[in-house]
Length: 226
Image 1 (tube, helix red, strand yellow):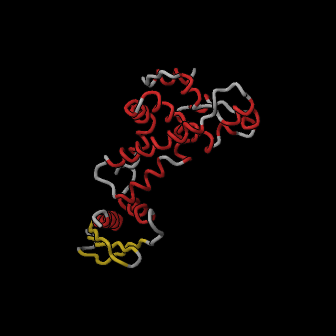
Image 2 (cartoon, rainbow, N blue to C red):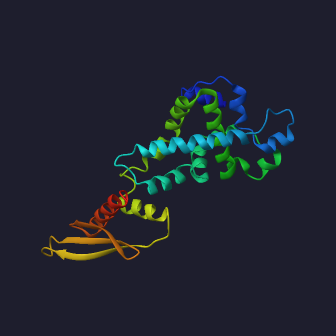
Image 3 (cartoon, rainbow, N blue to C red):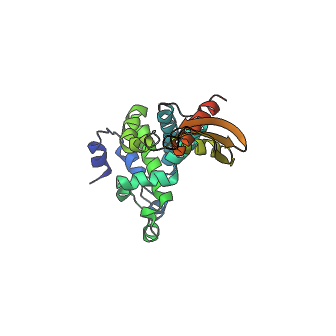
């Protein structure tokens, strides 16, 4: 199977085969094969830019709307070296990588830094060859499951608040039960969430855990308006 079989399988057109193949040529391979068409470093630069705008746009469209600080954190996570390497492994894309003998022997084919750069170069090549609409179609197939992990079903409001706060600082978050009302068999908890000692939100629920989540949601809604 070649990279072009992979593109055909995902219904992604291509014109410049040399450009696509160049995305998978590591600099170590060029050093040993002088006739090679060139390494993937410039394509990596282009792909990085495409991935940044793609992930930003997809995160922006999530409902309910994410606060800016949290979008920034999520985007960093989505296009991180570790995350992109995971996508490469999920799709076995590193089998197409061309490495020098030394790089191959030292595990370059499975090294996060090498294969994440290769993925960026691949995206850059598809973008240059086919444009934004086609490369978005490919990215939706390869990354949409990771975009969806930002959804409410995977990350609760406490996680979102933690990431929002840590996006800009290392402030501490504390959840404090300020009242417990009702009978013992049906209590109602009121929880305050404090960031560096200042109260940012309140939550009420029949369990302390849910009251904390509600307080985090309340705080996020307020922070998003600041």
